[in-house]
Length: 271
Image 1 (cartoon, rainbow, N blue to C red):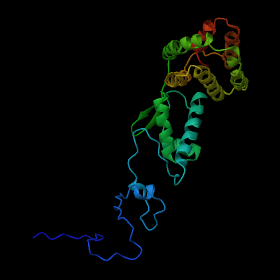
Image 2: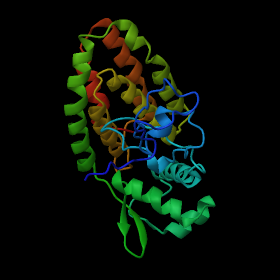
Image 3: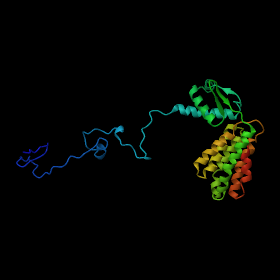
Image 4: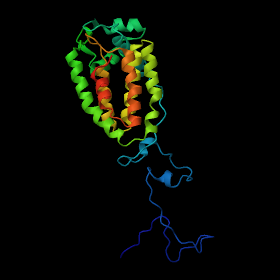
C-alpha cells in the first residue's frame, strides 16, 4: 500500500483550513540565485547584499563602472616631468651625442629618485634618443645627416599625400583655425627656445594631420617627427626660417595654391 509523502505546506482532504486562508491558492516558491536575487528584488529585506564578486561576468565589450582609485599615480607624473626635462636637455645639447649618463646621476640633477629617471630614459630609448648600456646607464645616440635625411623622406611619404588630399576638401576657414599654433611656434623660435619650438612644431603638424581622421597615421607621423628633431652635426635651418613655413603653408592652403613645394622644403630638415 502506497503512503502519500507530505511536504511542508502540503494540504490533504480533511485537513483543517487555517483561519484567513480559505480562498488562498498555494504559490510556488520562486527560485533565485545570490547573483540576481537582490538585483531583481532590491526591497527584499533580510537577504544578503550583493558583493562585487557575485556579479555576473560582463558581456564582451560591455562597460562596467570602475571604483575610484585609492591613490593617484604620482610616480607616473614624475616620470612624465622627468621625460620632458630630459628631452629638452637633449634638444638643447646639454646631453651631447655619445655621452653616457647613469640614472642615479640624472636623478640627483633633478632631485628625484632613480626609478622615474630609468622609466623616462626607457621612453627616450623607444624614441631613438638614447640606448641602454647594461650596468652603466644610458648613452645618447649620435645621429648623422643621413639618418635625418631618411627620416625626412619617410615623413614626406606620409604627410604630403595627406595634406594634398585635405587641400582638395577642407574649406579655407578650417585652415584659419591653425594660425594660433603657427603663431606659438613663431614666438618660440624668436625666443630661441629650441625645446619649446620642437613641441610647438609637433603640435602644429598634429593639428594639421588630425583633419584626416586617421589616428594610426597621426601616431606614426608624430613618432617620425620626434626622431627628426634630435641633434645632429652639420648645418640645420634657423628656427625663425623654419617657423615661417607654418603661416606660409596655411596661406597656400587657404588660397588653393599648390602646397607641396613648401611642405617638402619644410620637412627636408628640422632645426
